[in-house]
Figure 1 (cartoon, rainbow, N blue to C red):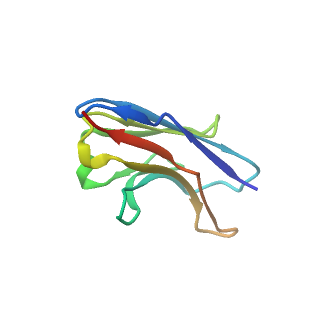
Figure 2 (cartoon, one colour):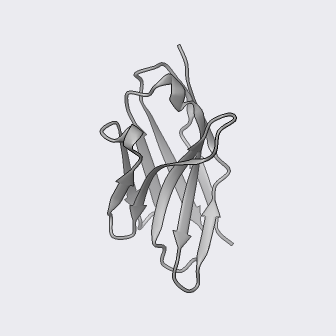
Length: 118
């Protein structure tokens, strides 16, 4: 059983910063990628950023230059540094880990609320 636990969400003013953390626990085969997704009220869950086990990163166009994803695989942690936050980025942010090869798996965290408000 794999568990992903997010932390670091909260209330921040527009233009502010937050750092999200995700801790993975449990016994799993080597993962392909970890990432962050978000879901705003009334909207579908969307990709924010991913990082592969080799350190390659991918970002949604809307966050490029403002968000940075990083990982500490020895500690089984992934982080999301979010700068210059915008009102429309209020959402629940979810951590994800996946492997596409055998044995394939995908797990989600419970989510952490990020509220951008003045």
